[in-house]
Image 1 (cartoon, helix red, strand yellow):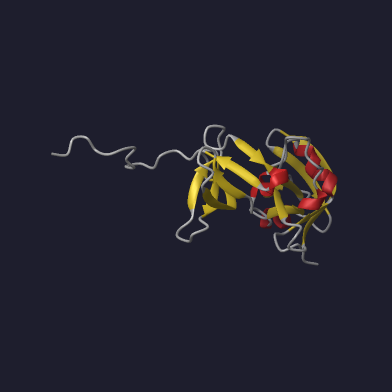
Image 2 (spheres, one colour):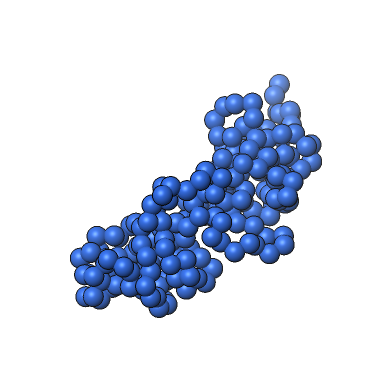
Length: 183
């Protein structure tokens, strides 16, 4: 059964491969507490179809090792390597006040904190290894651009108002004022 578009799928881990000879599955988790992935029981693919059903789990230094229904051999577990594991957003606990999930940023309006100029909307949250960045779709069209998700570049997030106040860094080669050296 596919998930409803208003309940996005959230990436919570990926299969790292088999563990041992009895078909246990190693899962690298993206949750704050690696064992919390076991509480979901049924992990899904991005399209909402069932990927794995966890029967039992134990923590390891790199995530968790799980026994999963229908995975009975090392070969079957190894064949799942790289499988991304999702849960519906509605399955996650509600964040504390003044906290949010990165997925909650998608669709928010982005305005400049000093000028209130509309910069665009958050299309996605990416992480290419150097920290989270927001992909912004400009309201006036044109290519998307990236905004570092740091306190300096994004000083305020107002989830309830659907708003991000940003102070984007100057682009490389962008002039801050007229060039005084021209003759």
